Length: 224
Image (cartoon, rainbow, N blue to C red):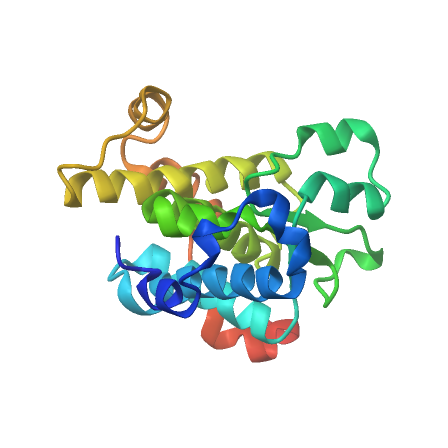
């Protein structure tokens, strides 16, 4: 788990030393690096996590990105991007600028379709993946959970989607806590884990965690 981004670190060895105010000087490099780090996290879930749940959401999210069902858009400022997309200030204020954010757009007929959702990826993902890879994986798990929920028609229950996203984040951190004695949860993370998700995703309602469409079925997602 700690080595999930090792290959990317070799590919982008100098980015960590750059200051945040230097990012606008090389925006294309940061866009490419941010997307590569997120895809590396999804690939780790799909291929190396040895966990059925993480494998399923990782594979699904990768397929959704590859087919542009849900485009992943790296941005230097999520709140600025939301303003540019026409969101009001209340919605902008609710967005955490340090977390990937999936936006589900309204569309007619309630049918899943390309362009129905978009995900913004903050450039800070690169810093976090290089310095705190486990927490970066946790945030990417939240994104993968949301992408999986979209394709499985769960977007109509945003509260449950958000809860599952938090559970996915804590699930990754809880596994890391068991694997690495030196990985410590913050007091808030320990409280969320013990009070709400002591068994990880197993406490979620069946309709939120039950297997439906997975990544291997995405090519025919309109028919599922």
